[in-house]
Image 1 (cartoon, rainbow, N blue to C red):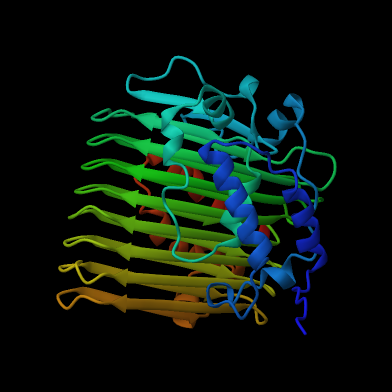
Image 2: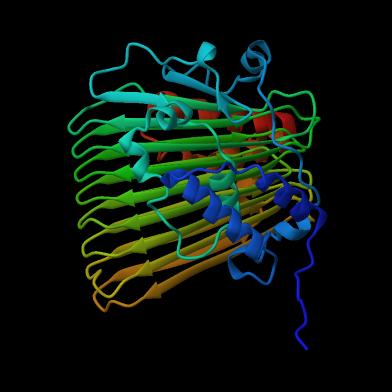
Length: 437
């Protein structure tokens, strides 16, 4: 007798599966990708603690309900809520509720060598660059990326021509601007040609009173000898649920530096996948997270060294107050052909609250024999001797703590090359500390 065995679905999974019914039919490659992603989610569902990559961020437990996909945002509402990084001199693109808002976006008079369009327009025009979407494939099923692939309808597509030097950053501002809780999805693609130089910034924000959900994914293809800087600021509303994925394919002799800064959301997970497919490249992936209340934030990295002579550096700082929980997972894989690899990874956590928790899981998987690789993780409270030194000079307790926290986080923020973006993130850290005091 054959039993019809069906997995038990949570209410959130059932609601998501219902929304996947709206995945459009079609015969083009993107439609095929969407349908494949929908089938993957139908098969695997939300990850839980028995899935190793999600051990500390049990989505099946944390995502108790799924909200409907957000509709179009009012231009005035989106403009009022998109505040982050406004003081930075950059070309600004506003994505509200997962769709680009042309009235608020600087899409004209592009620099020589820079091509910028919306994902929706690129799909309508059948742009050849879209053949790169989905080209960077994680080795394992990722629920966050699968949902983004299936449900995203808009985003930005940026191409930097070979040899072009684009001095002015492009800032993509994601904002939630609806009256009720909903989910927004955005997918972006950045292609940096050989020998080009480019700075890309992203920000994420929304109101505090709504339990909305945000899911973004950005793919970066970096040509030989190119230089790419990426800066991300996540300051979602206090009740929001944030999932984001960054995917990098790094060419020969290239330089890639990415910094992620997390302050907001009730639950946040940022996953970074990097494939070093060109020899003698250098990547630096750094970040800082400031948590309070009962916030939960997860930074997870997968670095795949496939070829010889590449170098990778990772430094992540986490500050935890009250009952917050931080998670850092980092895995460096060195393939057999990737001789002369130099990889270093470090996670450091500063615990301010008695009930706060930090989970670190650094990993190395090495199949080559001529490499230099290492990882480490530390977790502790503020140094009493340093605190006494400042207090003995008349500095009040809260101010002394803020100075030490600022210095702790500042080591990571200082890795940002762009002056304006670096100063903007220092200001956000200072504002967080001032609110704590």
